[in-house]
Image (cartoon, rainbow, N blue to C red; front, side, top):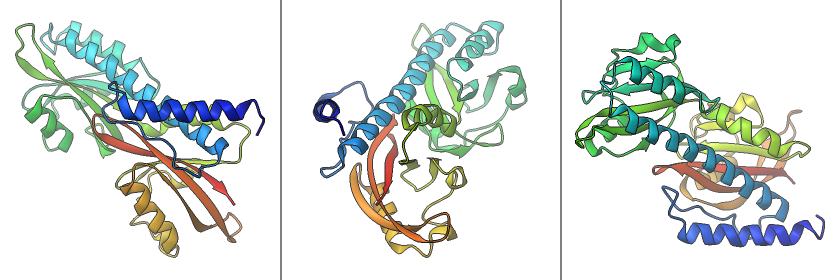
Length: 279
């Protein structure tokens, strides 16, 4: 590592610690890489955490503005549709955007390819039950959405000008697409692997696309690697840290890897962001 880069890494680590201690913009405090993380991995980890957090918060902000504007509509009129069409174009990972009533029924969905979901009862989804009960924003984990595929959902309450709760608006998006758009440019020219998982062990993103969607604690692929599973449980349980583990390389030969991870997320739902280096 160059002498010019090293002070920047130290400064970045210091800034992240301050942010973790006092930032009020995030739904939960950020966390620094664990002591002992090599500076280049730490710098990459900070960069990825920051950019993923920023992308999630930008979508959340666009959604909040849209929900405010939807409060001035009848939810199912042309004005509402226009708001949702515009919202759906704010990030390439967004599949569609919806407005639902207080019964948990989708009233309107845009773009037009998803009009077929209108009228769907989604009250059984945990995130829907949460927002109906609390009237507070939420981001779900990856679930099978009404559109029929795995996705994550960010939802915000809709209130009228008289402060009457009339439902909620949602962004349905693919986490892999959001994360890939950030990781790709950040890892160009490096051999380091990046993984992002939910706290239940579901892989949202991996440099190896065959790992995406796997449930780490249940998948037979990992059954013969108890140290990997031990590390996976640590990653799920601890907001940041470092560890080493063994896993099979592409040619079947076992190799040792070092993982450093930290946390991003939105509205209390956490993703673990990890940088993995072969030793």
